[in-house]
Length: 370
Image 1 (tube, rainbow, N blue to C red):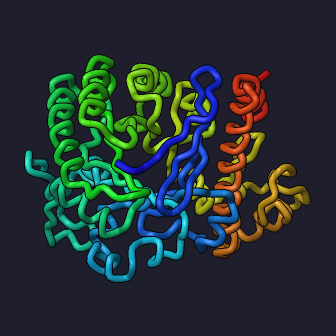
Image 2 (cartoon, one colour; image 1 turned 90 degrees about the vertical axis):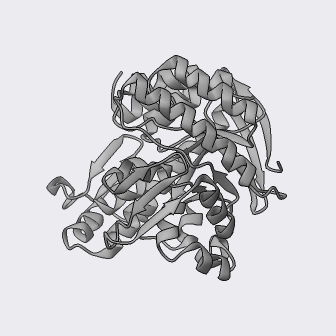
């Protein structure tokens, strides 16, 4: 396996590192912008890069459905196809097993998806197929195919899930084509049962991967449960491999997960919020549809250097009320900028051995709690 991870500094359990790929390295802790269908919605790739984003995430299921792995491969892979020159991670389609559960049939061999586009054509994806499609996409980080469970779930269901996704992880690893600057991550499952999380983590580390994801969280469970499961899993994972918490999350989720040893994150939250008039700031979130911003001359966040923060809240409110596309673009870019500023400040605080102080101060400003 050829994906290299340097662990640079540790502050408590918080980790500062660097992941080296064939399309450049990225600094951790890192937040990956979600570009499901080879696009971060509402932004050009130049605008994404301007936020400080180092890595984007694509989705194997959606790209399989359209335009298809064969076409992307013909176009030279996702980097050339989309215009993103940095590292790319692709989700395997495992999340869609849950999110499109009414269109899914699970079998030991793989997953049968009924098209969410036309409701007719059926597509069968084995772990090997998911890995092959991700190879066609030229993804720097391939994720194993797994099954993301709804929570709460029964112990019997969670046990069967762990056993099956472990078998699928081994099949995915066997199908992966090892090459310089590319890697494959295993995904720890086990719902909210600590012993099953431990079982899954042990099995995956025995197989051996370039990195390890913690899946099946941030799916509606209380934050305390998520943090408890991270606390169980993270110490069991190799120190010299990156750790990725899938689908997370809010700024407070990220801080709590970094505190417990997580290196990588992704979530649709900042981009989806930007398209629905919500802005993240150091003093909490703002709904820019709110009439109180109609004549507010101040910027969204006076410490932010993004294009939106060079304008007034009044102008942004005007764009949103008029349903102007520019409003969605500006707020989306601002939210990603905010997240990347947060990650940069987290990295700096770990380097300085001051992560806990930074976390405490950030939460106080963000929540308004003393």
